[in-house]
Length: 208
Image (cartoon, rainbow, N blue to C red):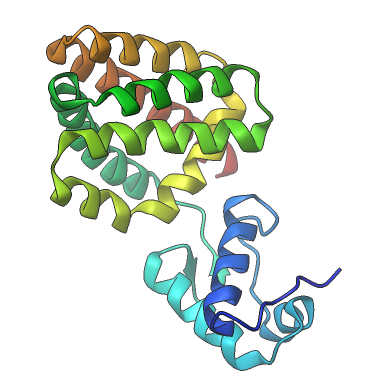
């Protein structure tokens, strides 16, 4: 089945988004060779925008040598190491800076994380972490995490699929922030992300 490409947005950008989502959602699994002809036929476009999309995915680190990557243990440890530091600090800052609107959004997405579909849970997970970083008021934190966005999303689906307690942890972090307890919020966020890393490393061992 072909994916519909809109005429109102650059074709290469749409091709990039579609292929990226296929990787993140597991439709293109680690080790899959990206064949320009097949992807172009799937998207109903020429090979040129597909080639540009693959080049961009290689720059992001999702693809290497036109093959979908399986993040190495070092890549997982490095990326989560940065997240543990920056998102832990963000949670501490959020305890002081969170707005009323952000509080309501956090409450709603925690509920979605408990009862939603897998796709809704993944989206809620992303929004949860994004709001806390936004509430930190530190744009440099957001910029650094954004550069790892694709790798984070790749790991996030795995975490949501395998860790049933993830939403309880989110709820505990949220409560600490709502209580204005920055120290507790930071500690819980760091523990939460460390547990997520442990799961990703375990699956990395299984794949190897």
